[in-house]
Image (cartoon, rainbow, N blue to C red; front, side, top):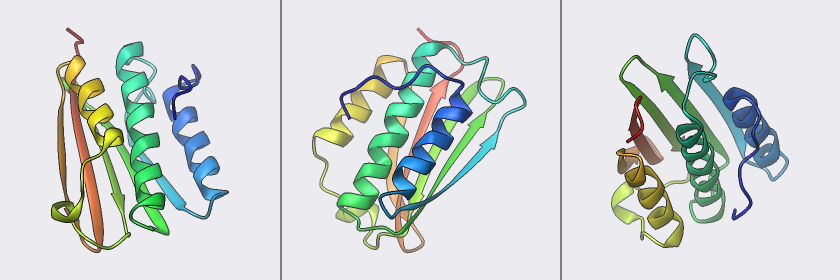
Length: 135
């Protein structure tokens, strides 16, 4: 988790995470709503998106014991939104925030974004919102 994310196109990196976690037994669906597949994102935004997705998937597999997760990225004119949902049971209220979530909050906050942890059907949902312009 400490190694820097790859520098390839953002969607390619998300697909790489899908394959990586799939090999560990977590079925990951990647959904992207973006006309240019994330190519226009600031490098700091792309790094935060990849690091956040990686940490959320790690938490889903390790702590939530999820078997399925969805990584949804939406890039709009003013905002970048990342949602990671899992079927690991429990709820956002049950999550004890450790170093992984603290790291997410710090990375997202450093570029002016927000983090919301909540429940989603039979699991947890992590939602991150980043401004398109990085401070």
